[in-house]
Image 1 (cartoon, rainbow, N blue to C red):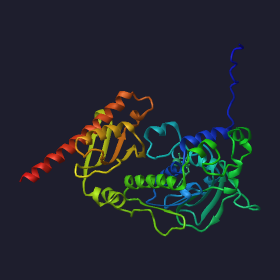
Image 2: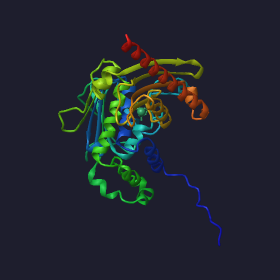
Image 3: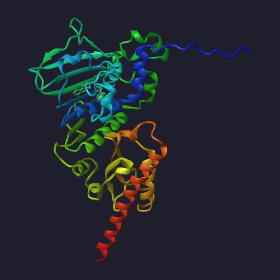
Image 4: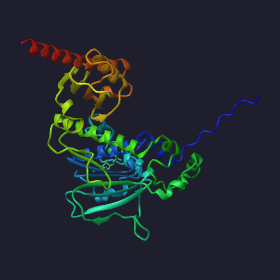
Length: 373
Ligand code: ADP
Ligand code: MG
């Protein structure tokens, strides 16, 4: 038998790299929306309005009242590695924004058609520009690709849209690899077949989107969020500006859970962490656990945290019922390094969950005390 000959090593075309990167950030519409929300928050917005069509598979639109984007920056804003948030490597050590890689808009523009309308406070008018594959494109035949002046309020509106007439050209994986430079990929989440398969249906994608909006609304209580379907008068999420975390939880997750919340807050310098948590007490339970976990202000999933917390509540709640948890954990950038030792991670989980357990014990004993007197 002839020996297996390895395939030659090649440099990936840039368009392929861009799609791989897009896949990491943006598996589905809800991931794209999360990036856009984080950009709006980074821009100092206190009002964020979202409109969705077909679960985001056709259209995502987000309007904020933040700082806006300077007109001169519009030509490069959707290119990869363009960011206003860091200048040098040193800035990474004390980063205060969600973004800094300058990749999200680039990724989105490689899988969809993007239109940005934006106004900074010092500009007399708003500017509108359209993008595809990271670059400015003409919005209509016969019109130049340059940003156009337009009326608008301070802030930014970003529209991410799918051109359905292009759907049928996206059929085989080879098509992309072989033709990628030629493709004008404008079909959000559709231009990579693997991603197309992973998507479910519009209503499933819409509930993922609502979940993201609800989480960010709780974590950014005080910022007004609305989210609705295109053409609907009724918002599916609506939170006002200037309210507390408990208010937002009441509004979104209901008065029943809001009435049974315990609060705790701790700083553990030896672990370089601090956290705040709103957790349901033993009077409250639901069929499926609600766990809003933010680590350094980013919404994340952690099977580890979830399991440990479930175990604590297992002793308190009826069988097959679960708690509501909103946990905001801040870890010093030194410790979130990808190389942080796994045991350190375990120690952090144990410390936070230990505090949750103590808080529940406290609440339980004071409850007993109250009923005794
Ligand atoms: P990053 O957030 O990592 O900088 P992005 O690709 O998400 O990268 O955004 C690129 C840049 O576009 C940002 O650094 C910011 O200057 C600008 N930008 C994006 N969205 C907004 C927005 N909603 N308001 C103001 N500026 C924005
Ligand atoms: Mg960003």
